[in-house]
Length: 153
Image (cartoon, rainbow, N blue to C red; front, side, top):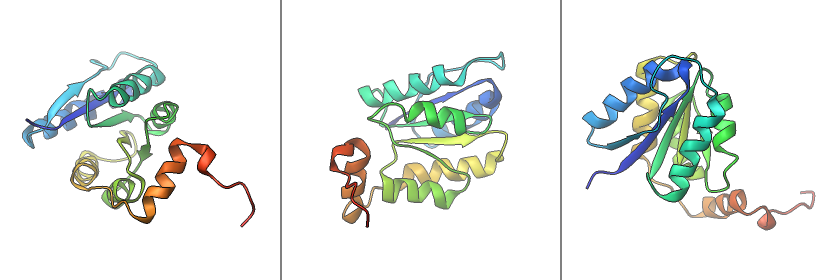
């Protein structure tokens, strides 16, 4: 069974979302498209919360969230404690978001990067496993601030 990837966008990134959804299907992924379904103006937080809930529930293993800059939607996704959404603009950052931060949602800015860069980011994000090891302690602190130290270094 193919890995399921959720994808979501606001109106500014609708066209890029459609192209990335096709790219994912061509690569054999099961795509859960959570909208929006046109270029009619919508509020990105609605879609950020939608994908965060889907990933947290396990409806999809990972998610891709897009808006014009990627900033607003990444902030809304990161409001959910089960999500680690990384806003990236190149393939290396996407790879490191997975490898070091166990990011489960990728955010992209459709007005800031082109489709080829977006495809590279998606491919790196989906192909890279979490390294674990020394990074696990840090990721644990992202989900549970009680583990974080507040003493000055």
